[in-house]
Image (cartoon, rainbow, N blue to C red; front, side):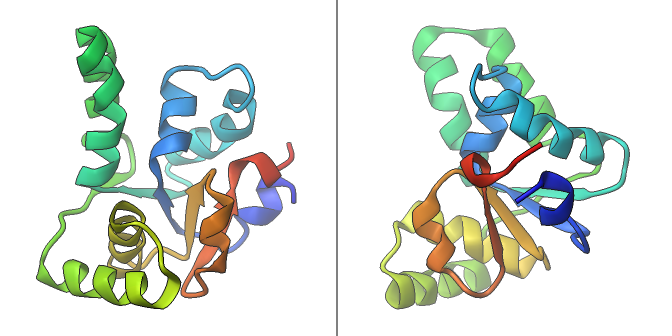
Length: 148
């Protein structure tokens, strides 16, 4: 599916960890597929939603390697990015995550991410985890299935 079609009628898009890493680190395979999404966010055509899970997962390798600038690049995008909402995880999100885990047998991290997306009114969830396509509460967009 073309990226423009995938984003049609989407006003709020949740950014899972992998697409953020692909963009910030300019991944050789996936950067060109995710860049148009981030350009729409920067142009205020799309609101991005992120969570503490996205931030924590993105920071693991930069912390491990002692890459302070990369750490800051992730924080700047995920927490303070243009047209980006950094959403918290509260009791309601935790309960919804538990329900999603029970229904779909997904990991806690994935359940928390999707629960935040639903709580924040996201119509779609950008990931590269095809297993999440079984979640039916919102549109799951898998990066490797997108086309320019």
